Length: 228
Image (cartoon, rainbow, N blue to C red; front, top):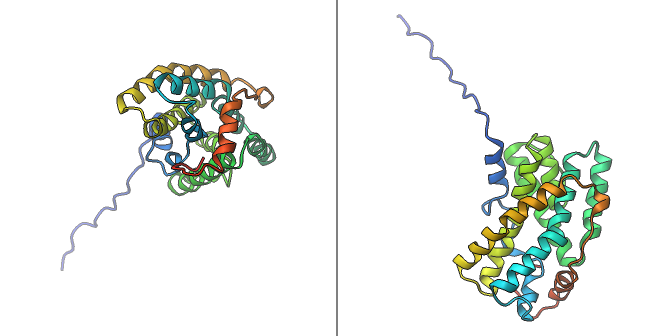
């Protein structure tokens, strides 16, 4: 009995992905790092009335981006991106942990970093290990050869967006007011990111004492919605 022609096996060929789309996925609210559950001390600042409206939140956010964890984390991210070996990477991770001013802020960066590493390993095949969040993102971006400037900008903007989301719930701010503030600080995110990726870890420094104290005091706050 005659047989038909052999059936061809169709092997899908993976198409190259625009690295910006990869970054959009990594740093979107849908990526399961749990960013929505952390306020970075903002919950205490709202509780005490330090942050109470759009103007006070905008000032708080700008200070953290420019003089606090925002800038510092981008410097750590860039250093991890360029880390030449595992010893250097571990040294950066230890520095990131030492910079956390409170137990909750340490938990914030540890838990987000672990969640990011696990998801990214499963989906993209990158192995970064249990690293703090900015170090894990920088390491993964380096392994995948994603552009550093865009990685830093997306990372910092995602941080600003997460805090804005917390402020919308806590202050509370309206959705439109929150998005207006985020729109206003977006150019600042780009400026800080572009400068920070050129700076070595030795240039890390912080002057956001109120935010640091807020994160410490939040640990014993009676009623809390957020983990930090």
